[in-house]
Length: 285
Length: 320
Image 1 (cartoon, rainbow over the protein chains, first blue to last red):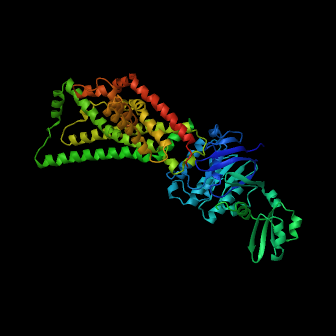
Image 2 (spheres, rainbow over the protein chains, first blue to last red; image 1 turned 60 degrees about the vertical axis):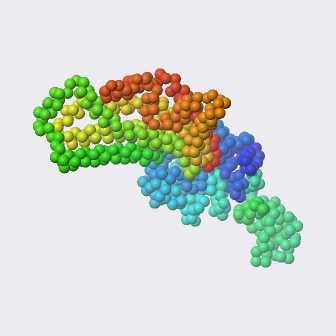
Image 3 (cartoon, rainbow over the protein chains, first blue to last red; image 1 turned 60 degrees about the horizontal axis):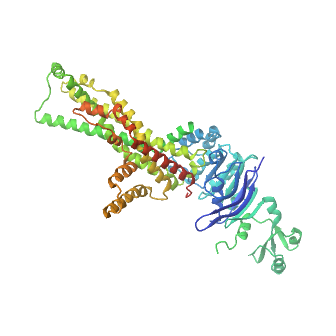
């Protein structure tokens, strides 16, 4: 299957900030891509460009469509959840299901009703009577019943408690995701998505600073716990980050040979959040 | 087509309060006030020993015989007017409902960000905006007319029952009214309403799609401010722009045309010597003449341009 998203030279400028600065990337089918960056780094702008919600300069193809020109067609193949609580507050569960069922050609009503049956939602309940977690359950039930090729999630679990967050990603993995689908997700809660991601993209000040699949990241980045007496040796290998824990130093290396690092101390794979913190050092300074 | 139907239905779901319950409540209050009036009449009449009981049914015959052709027509027209009256009052309220509906239609979902949900569905912005035009100019008036006519018929029945308690059999008189003609005239006026209201609907939707905040202020202040500036220039005598023309044909049309019946100002020979004549001059057979006036079509053209603008802003406004 062909590439899902191809972006080259994407730029977007708001009045005072460069939200996207000549960004290029590709996303292949069957991947779960985490687009991760600090506040204001351009994540949402990138997603909006992909969805045709904002104008930009540069080349962008999503599922073969130009989101600026062919948005209506594109939306037949793409779903998105933009944080919680964007469902209209007046709508009832049954109205939402009825409406989507009748305007979306790829919506499977029975699937949606099966998902809803697992929740406490009732057909006559209005969104304004729901908690944030319930709104997301409804939204997810609607979206998962659509046989879309690309699902875009923009901070989908913001403000949810841990039970809803876990359930959200679990449903996505178990009942939705397969090799024909692609998911792009932005989030700050890196710990919760890191084990489901296949690809990682870090974005900072409108630029992509890291774009790799998880296997490659495991090979490229290595964390070593070094005793204080050997810290200087480790520093000579130019670590990208250093922190102290229990009198030992933990160094993060980018692209240094594994065998060499193993001689310094205990080697392990860095967590995405440690990688993120190291990469984004000084962003707010 | 199916999508469009559901889009209109969605508007009805969201605005059930304004489109459906408002006319019903106004109609109900109207009936209640009339009922109170009848009861007051009964009580006062009873207290003052005033009895308009005409005795027996032959009084009715006398009455009927006394009515010549001319007065029969007048009575019929009077009854028709009774049937029209609730719809007229509901129509006034409808104007306000449609006005505020249009102002919020493309703004409220941007403010509460539910726009992002609607935009996640394969619906074109053109269909979205047009569905709101149809909801405002066809669905809302249609509901208002149905409720208004039902209220009118209920009111006639109420009077008939009240009078029959006094031995006047008005059921015969009721046959002088023309309920179907009333309904036909009201329903027939919906296309006129669409054409007449379009400039206001277009302007309000444009403001609704464009403004980043306070669409009401923009929609009202902008045309009024321009009018004041024109008036001021006139006062200085520097520019000779017809001030009253501007207020009537621009401000009036972009702000007030959602109130039904405005098109009657464009029709010649409204009125008459007796109720029947007045009514027939208000009938659709006569008022459709307004479609011959270029004013109307200039308004429609302006509305089309404003709606195109609204669609464009709906597509590209990026602030949620």
